[in-house]
Image 1 (cartoon, one colour):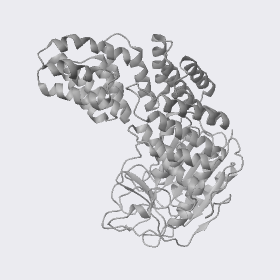
Image 2 (cartoon, rainbow, N blue to C red):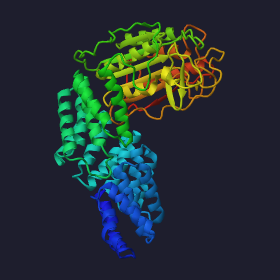
Image 3 (cartoon, rainbow, N blue to C red):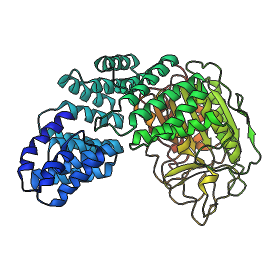
Image 4 (cartoon, rainbow, N blue to C red):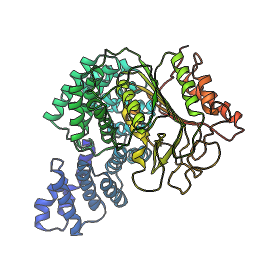
Length: 572
């Protein structure tokens, strides 16, 4: 980015020769266009220059660009986009397109970011910085091959670019090439030992290799460097490096069983102001993980307590209790865990006969292929909270985690919820507080070194309609269309094994409860999930075909995946 800033600064000589007040020439100009000017002063100076209304065209575009630089340093990406868009209207340039693309990237709008980086490359000679930034956007989309190709171009342009080596290492790690990733991170550290970012990413590699002491050491050094010399690159979102460092070290401490230090790091993660999408995702995970290492009896964050009811939990491993969480036994490498819940005995909405049967069938199939299964049937909210918390806590040391739920499910304001048997669905306030937020489960599982598979045999409908107990044998609370799939599969999808979410039916459709002992989806799932040597997405394809055939096209299972390689639940 430095070269692009210098290139745009060539306009300064003509800028100051234009008619302007003496104060603007001697004070406002340098404050607006000097990279080291504090962000607030930069924005204020540029705004005053714009208010003078004495500049036009390319000169005015330059001022808008520099004010966008100030907004970017403050983490205000909406204003960055507004100012760079105006600068592009006045005079397009590589630097302006690059800055706007980076703002879209920080907002998580990767397709728009890539389009801006493409336009930047069209406007001038190949530039390693733009290739690097476009590589970041490809990585955000999960297209790691294209990301690596762009990082290769960036490294070719500048073989001493530590960030390009670092980010190419992230992409390699996402594809499962841990040794290649480690090599790139080591090279980035050799090129610039003062950078905390390569150390943070190397932390994830050490965790994936179960070398937790090295992971903690790298995380500690990254925190020290980030505090000693906060990153000044305008393309680095404010506080993002320190948030990432604390959250990575916290995960390493937790995996090791050092809950006291993990708690301190999660608190530190949450105490920092986040501006970008990645940092907010890290904080969402930290919020859930903190609750798990602090008080096992407390509800999962975002949900409020509800009265407990009857419950039946048949775990195959000991669940937590009201005492402080004990330090876990040493983790077994490659541990595979599953949480299976089937809710059918609803007290206030239509009961479903099959979810308990479905849960038992799926749990048995998973046990048969070596999973450690926690199983719950007809759980009220308190029981669902407890079994979910216990599972999320143990999943910190798992390589593969599966969550299966059968029963009623709804979607409210773009968020999916699982329905305990004691919930009373009524229009009004506090409705979602009585349910289990699926996004919270995703946040709790979000980690770069674990494969997550979530399977829901539940319809996603809005429960706020007047009728909440539609007639018919379906798993929708009522018949209005559901919303779209989750927009995010978790920040861990940017490096690591990835996440797959499978639903028993397509968005807006109804998942049938079935006329036999099991639902069409769960019956097919329990038959195919244990097939030796069958890759998980191929397994779901077989399930989908069987359900479509068995329901005469009334139900079409649907899935969304960020898995980065082949995953086999039953060994070949």
